[in-house]
Image (cartoon, rainbow, N blue to C red; front, side, top):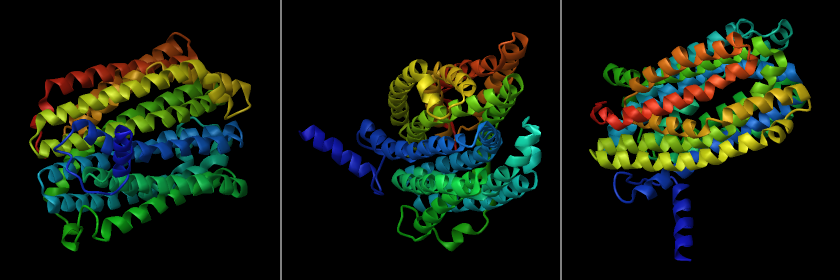
Length: 459
């Protein structure tokens, strides 16, 4: 009974915005306190991905293809956002570990200055070239004609995307994952509520309107709590005066992290286009349904991996190297257990999962095949995520970037072309390269983490 009460107490504590010292005490408890809100933060986001696809799926295969092609490209926006967020988390966590709260606030403020510039450029670019983006992705003229407005609205909200993920990175680095959780829950909750309503009245573009409105709602909530002066970090006007030294540090950590995600999302763009070319609209639609389900389960695992970044950053700042390493080892074990269960689900229950989203049997067939292929590598996805985030949290963002480049662009893409076109395996061959590349990434990142050079990174 006492154990049960202790578990409930720990869960409640993890959901409160309470300043805690993650550099001392029980490592498993520190992992749980950080991991629960981080997992919940991305869980509702993953629910939204499925809800959105469910309602978009009722608009037909062209709508599904439009959403899939657009999101394959807009992952570049997410990549840059994640890069800035990773940089902010690493630097803020390091300063918190050093007990330098003013330095943490200054670094967070300077990262926001960078975000304004980057987000504005991305929004203008996307709005101006929406139709061309779809065409480059291999969309049919009909999909371009009907889907350009969706793409334009989605890219127009780039500034909200950048702020949403960056500010949550600041919260996580400061050791306040509960606030990051609430921010993304509000964004996803508004999105889920508005999605069916706006799709009913406006069709496909209503889905984009719901997404942008939800993201913006989350940013408004974040901004209120970030700047009201009662949080973990106290932001003051001088923190926002351009400091080229701190900006340089933020950029030096962030740009390799952004390229990590750009490299991986860029390879996804190539694979999505290859699927569309070799399998047509039905294969593309089936792949997108499978991808949404893939995201549904990968995001909670990513949330757990984010705990590794915070714990590594803060413990390095406190010069507790052994504790940082122990935290990563424990999180890896948790992620492997979770991903093993998901792998079993995808391998044996893929047909009913995909069938829930569409009545088109051709799309169901392609989607089932795609989900089974994705599922075969889930254990390795989990290992790769934790190792990558551990290196990122240490500020060693360059090593995972180099690994991603070799494993995605020099291994995955050539393998996808060889299997899909060289060996005539069509879309299945293109997707089979995904678990192969992720397995290689898991092994290589694990090797570099074990070498321990991340312990010597200064930021």
